[in-house]
Length: 110
Image (cartoon, rainbow, N blue to C red; front, side, top):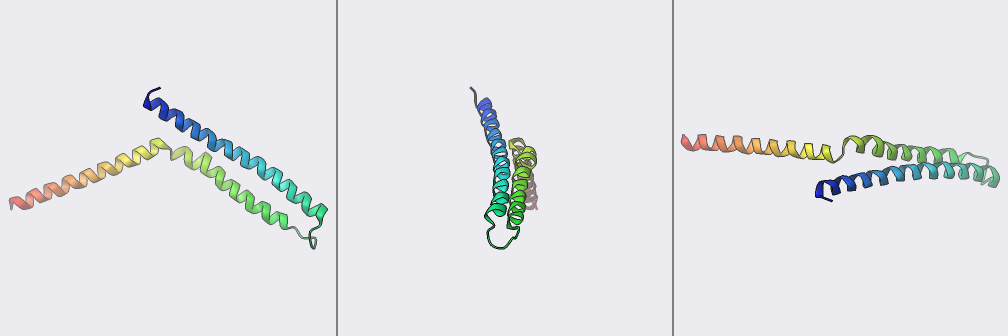
């Protein structure tokens, strides 16, 4: 397998692992929420309050952040995007160096 194919394989493997973790996080969220709900009802911990609602809300928020990172942010900001940004920065630096060199050569002629 050549280097380009190896890199594609590694990127695909990494992406699959990220998606797998999101699915695992979702299942854990469902099971954990169910457990907190049942624990609140049957264990009657303290006064009859609904502490589990706050805990589940925070957990859902964290899950949404994880989901957005994997399925939205990483989808568009992948290796190709990184290469394009690096290339743009390199070109910008090279253009700046050329303009400084030309300015320096004009100043030396004067």
